[in-house]
Image (tube, rainbow, N blue to C red; front, side, top):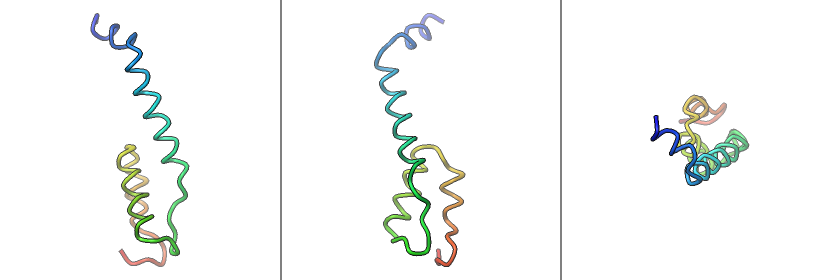
Length: 69
């Protein structure tokens, strides 16, 4: 229990939590790729969502209307 309290009072932990929150917000604000999107943008979109832990959103974007996989 002491280790948990020590971790919660460590400012480095909060810096990492805030950085992850900002990264997740950035990734969540990306527009979903459409049929006119480049392959690079579709890859970056999926990759960033996988890194952010949005596995469901990344998996759903594998099926873009009008685009072959």
